[in-house]
Length: 331
Ligand code: UT7
Image 1 (cartoon, rainbow, N blue to C red):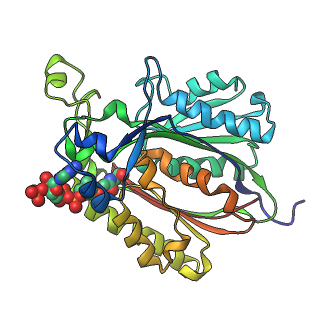
Image 2 (image 1 turned 120 degrees about the vertical axis):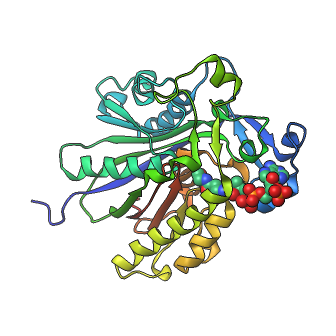
Image 3 (image 1 turned 120 degrees about the horizontal axis):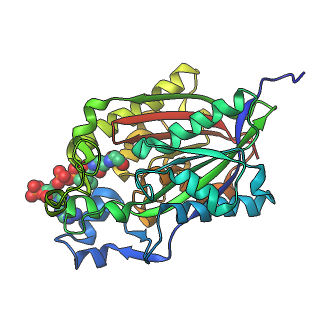
């Protein structure tokens, strides 16, 4: 018998961003905005866009997963389950997770999509952790994949400057050294749905000529309202997780926040007493990639992480959904 119970640890990270760089300066030519406004209000300088016919979120996720398979020398047939967090699935159904499984050759895996907007990756990771902790699963992939450009209205300066395309993925495996996911606090409140959503295309308002003409198949956000909830939600839940375990900012090696706005990230770090040098920030180059922001941070920082490092992953997004996870890095 193992001395410690099974914990669920991230054992590999993969990522992918498309080549095309959409800069603030190019956006200046598309809508009434400017580089200075975007940088000072959001922290974003550029974002990546997936161009080309026939390419979708699954193609981004597939590249991220392939990197993991390569790095670990893993046979895709060993993958047991794929959970894909996305608000930009290839199609309303079937699940993008199934399409990724097909594209990488993970034909023994079952899978499903997790729809929790910007908190999707955290919710999916927490779900995967429970599969591993139960002892029934040994290899689960969690993917955050978004082609946000597919639901951006490039005539609406309120939203189109914020989002970008990209994907990140992690492999989750059992650990017997007490490393990996220690605890999570996850929350949602459907009353927040009015502030951030897509108006049409669901069963409430199916696609019609009218919905297309009214530009209702794009992401809609009341930025200022979401901002207030996001600052409070992400900071509160992160502080709650620290307090629950008697931790302070000094105990934390890295804060891995959802990348929606640099000001929200700063507020969360301040509230937790975590210095900026310990906060993963890459919003300037990718913008908000929704479910992909957190794994893309892990991907960018992977080489700097050390076994045993304490990480807090924190997110806030549409729904509203929000949460924080404490994990000990396992490699
Ligand atoms: O990831 C999911 C969760 N989402 C979030 O966490 C996003 C939360 N919200 C935000 O990050 C911010 O609210 C935004 C970045 C979206 C907007 O920043 P803000 O400081 O809240 O600006 P605002 O919406 O209050 O707008 C201030 C001004 C307005 O002009 P007036 O009314 O003061 O004349 C806007 O029309 O800025 C104007 N504005 C712009 N100006 C130049 C809005 N968008 C732009 C733009 N370029 N792109």
